[in-house]
Image (cartoon, rainbow, N blue to C red):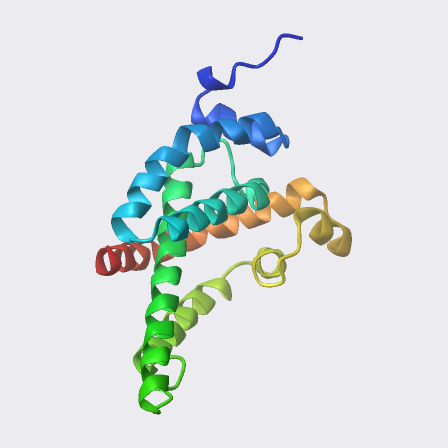
Length: 194
């Protein structure tokens, strides 16, 4: 069998190989996307060490969640969305930490989460939950086990007596439904933060 030339593979071919646990394809994705993601993150985050940590988180998430991808997925879209989410989380944490340390110096210890942030987070959580409960029962159960209990497809399949392919299909279909219904909301979040 001839060796695979990862550099000549399309993104969808690389996803297909990653779904087969091909670490070489994963390394090619890293080589292909890390310089662009690094440059993009540097525009948002000043600290280069933080940017390196963000990239490590993004590519770890790609490998950890690889079985939720499909060859039709936009690899660049997935990576940039993950980077955007992790960047927002980092900036929020840094702002909270800065506010907390400033308050410590004055003796006025604040609530760790601002009330407005908590309200927005709760509202977003309620919107997402409203969409999740509208999923078909088995799809909802599988999705919650995957995304809220952090079980692997194999663990879910074993627990529910399903095939891993069925579990994967349920998770992908749930994500597709949620993206369609919450797409505008996610676009708005992108507009507000970037």
